[in-house]
Image (cartoon, rainbow, N blue to C red):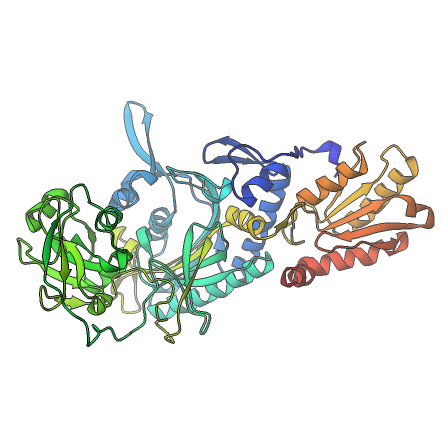
Length: 585
């Protein structure tokens, strides 16, 4: 392919609104073009890279025995109503109505395809002899992101690979889960991505048992809790806090409780500012509804309640913050002044064990505009149950080995779930076992954000000149760059080299533009082609200059050695060894 025959609109300056490296560089390199907030077109270079990522995903899925199909982007809303996910997704679910022949049909733009695939399987799978079965697709998904940002990392429309497995028993599900986990590791390894598998919560998908695959990145919107000692990793929603003995110091002096006016101090920040105290001296009391029953949850002022962990600790199906009327009924005060002392209703009190060691704490007084100071556990209030109900923090003990935990930002690029029977129960997906008894099919679900592979790679692989692509994902593996496009000998050599490489199976872009060498070199580095072949003065000696994008220096190569270079490129495509070695330096 010649540069002049394709569309590569490179930019010199940072585009307006672009904040992080992947967004800036993908726009500057002419890979994507914004259509509207949260929606991007993939231009030729971006589409080529996305296509390569798609092929890697497809190859590894096929190796597991998964079978590809293609489902619809539109789905009847009634399917989502059967699984109660219209409410679970909320405004994220893109809904519309189709008017046909005087009737109206409510439909959704699928954010995932659990409902549709389960409906299909329920129609065509009826016997245990047809199971296990794993089906997958690579399809555009739609979600109404209220705050789309960071280019293609957080958009309303994105390319996703989703696979679904169907089983007669949990052992079979576990076997497929392990295959998919290994396939994901192989995919991200082949793509040259730094990745970290972490334990995760299933969220709106449902089911039990899951792992997210994260790309460590300072611009990631997810927080990963990580133990450097034993390599335990989990997202904040799932991360456990290891056991630790918490006790009030034996020499602690318990002061007398006092009630203070705190006008306008509704939040921890406001209370601390008003009383000139630190959040570690405050215990916040949050009133939750656990399966509609009010529960008080106590955590230190600088901690956050973890709702999935609270739900599991209480053994309920649903937890949510109580409404204002419930809070006022239970506490006798408006929102912002709840405390464990003097609640108006007898309700269960759950607390993080950390408060056992706190002395002379500040709590809400259960009165409007008032707080209590010098409150102490046991003397002034009691707790019904202590448990791990908060988000893990830096320095907490690891739940596996007890070593201090660290935390880092990350980008989620994949997720594997053990769904169980959440969807097959709701959509009546059954099979007959060997005794002709009807049983519910057990499911697994495995998703990869294919477009996030591309953005995640750019986010973690760039320098001041531009993107640094591994050969496996580069839009073109080689850029052939004649210094003078008007020089006939140079162009003939360039075309011969490009033809020879293409015949050997290498992706080549010939920069045939009549531009200054500096412009060509800067564009090549900005886009990040793994290999640049420069045809200049050394052509008189039968040589060309070869530079790998991540190397500081170039080398001379004889025109009769192009075949050997093609073999190096194909080997690098398969192993990524040069790219990985350069990243480690």
